[in-house]
Image 1 (cartoon, rainbow, N blue to C red):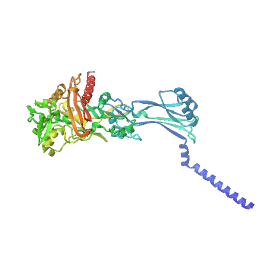
Image 2: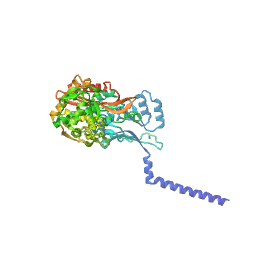
Image 3: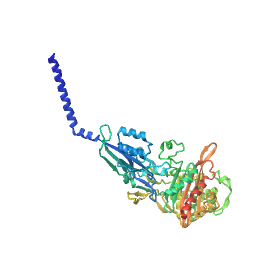
Image 4: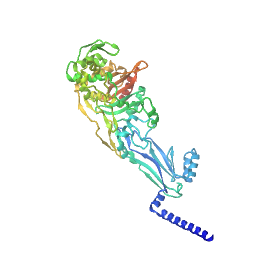
Length: 534
C-alpha cells in the first residue's frame, strides 16, 4: 500500500516539475516577454485631424471651431484639479474614474494649467450650421471622404493629417502605475495644410441666408470674368453632424441641386439670341406677336396668351416672348442654336475632382430638331432640354465677360502647413471667345432692360445695375391638380467697372412662385452690391 502511495506521489512530483519547466520556458520566450511589455503601455487617443478646407481667402470652412480635451491619469492630484476646474459638476464621474484607475478623456469648457493633466486644443471638423455642406461633403466612420470636397480631395486632406496621443504605464488591470512616466505625441499642427476653394466665406454665408425662402432649389454665384464659384447653395440643406436625419429626408437633403439638371424655360432664349446675333441672319426686328403661333398643327402660346405686338430681339428678351423665339428658331435652324449651346457649356459635364461633377444635362440631337414641333419647344427652353444651375451661371458669366466662356471653377489649389497656396489647374478647363463683344453687349442691354421694365423688374436691386433673364419651366408633373414648375432668375450685377458677379437662382417644383425667386435674387444682389461699395 505504501509502495503504491509513493508511486503516485512520485508521479505528481514529476508532473509538477514538468509544468514548472514549461512555465519557465514560456515566460522566458522573447515573444511573450514583448507581449507582456506591450500590455504595460496604455494608448489614449485624444484626437485625429485631417487637412483643412479653406475658402479663397484662406479662411477655414471646416475645423475652425475648437474644443479643449484633457487627457487624465486618475491620480488624487489630477482628479482634485478637475473637480475644482469644473465646480464639482462632475464629482461622481471623477470619483468613479479615480476608483477605476484607468486613463480617460474629458472635454473642458476652457483651458487650465496643471502638471498632472495633458490639455489639447482640438479642432472640431463640422459645426451644426456648417457652411456649404453640399460642397464640403462628409466623412465615413473611418474618417475618409464620402462626398463633396472631402471625397474629391481625400488624398490631399489625408496627407495633411495629425493626431494627439498619450501613452501611460499601466499594470495588468490597466491602472496607471503610480510615478510612471507618460509620453505625449501631438502632431495636430500638421493638419493646417489642405485645400483652398474658390468659395468666399462671406458670400457663401449671405447667399445661404438669402436663399432660405426657396425651400427647394439652388443658388450659384460666380465672379466675372474667370467664373470662380464664390457661393453654391442647395436646398434643403443638411448638417454633417446629423447625417441620419439627412438620409431619412423625403426631400433629398443630401442631393446637390446646383449640380442637377432641370428644364431651363425662357432662360434658354439667351442662347437663341446669341446664335441669331452671331449668324448675322434675319433677327426678325419687326415681328408681330399675337400671343400664339401654329407650328405643325400645334398651337404654342406666350405666357398667359399675352400678345406682345411688334417686337425686336431686345424687346422679345425683355418681355420673354415665346412666339418671337419660336420664329427665330425657324429662321436660324436647330443646328445654329445647338452649336451655341455647346459653346456656352451646356450639355457638358463639369468635373471638379474625383466624385465631384455636375450632371451633363440634355441637349437634343440635331436630327431631332428637323421636327418643327421639337424645334419650337427647343427655341424657348422646353421639351427634353435640361441644364444645371452651374451651367447657366457659366453661360451668363460668358455674356457678362464680353463673350468669353470660362469653365466654372471650384478648387483654387492646395495649401501647405505654412498656409502657402499652390494653384492647381481645373480638371475641366476651357476659356474661349464664343461670341463677339458687341453680341455680348447687346444681350446685356436686353437683360438690363428686363430688370428696368421687363419680366425681371420685381428682382431689381436698388444699389447696383443688374441684368437678368427669367424663366418658368414646365415639368409635366401634377400635384393636387396643378402642374409643378421650375422658376429661374439668372443674371449679373455690376460695380463701377462693369459686370462683377453672376447669380443663378432656381426654385424647384412649385405650382406658384409668388415672387420668392425674385426676392432671393434681389437680396443677394443688394448684399453683393454693398460689398462692392466698401
